[in-house]
Structures are given as C-alpha cells and as structure tokens.
Length: 115
Image 1 (cartoon, rainbow, N blue to C red):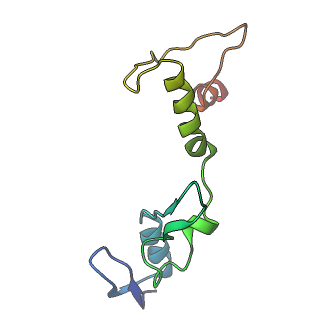
Image 2 (image 1 turned 120 degrees about the vertical axis):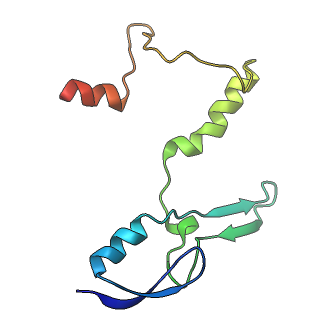
C-alpha cells in the first residue's frame, strides 16, 4: 500500500507516494559516502562530512560506518612497495603463484571449488 513520503534525491527533497518496501529498495541504491580530514601532526579535525544529507540519513558514516580493512591497509602496502623501488605504474601479472609451498586463493576460486 502506497503512503505519502518525502525522499532524498540529488536534485533536492521530493514528496511522493511509495510503499515502504519500495522506499527501502530506493534508499539501498543510494550511494552514501563520507570523509574526514585530519592534520597528522596535531590531530586537529580539518573537515568532517558524515554523509550526503542529514535530514534524510541521520547516520554519521564517519563515526559509525564500518570500513573494509583493505582500504585502511592500502597506503601502508603502497608505501612499502614504493620504498622497495616499485613504481605506482608497475603492472603485476594476474595468475596463481605458490610461495614456499603456500598458494593463496581468493573468494572467487573458493566459490568455484564449493560449487
């Protein structure tokens, strides 16, 4: 059953009629992003943008959002590679390799094996 509601759009708020399930589906498609910038030497926060629109999404993505560990580790991994002479443009071949008897396997290979 459709009910009146006010939804977020990139062109501003919009009054419309939707079922609650359609509202959930619509909002799940919305890319939500956040950003925090800090002065590394002092720890002072320079910018804090917790989301796209607080009127519609009362959730601080910076403070409460979860992040993938890989995104946090990338700058450290890249720094070690650059310190060891690799260029940011260095291309690594994408094929399976074995290191000292250990062969790393990704999720895609694991899913195929389970099928």
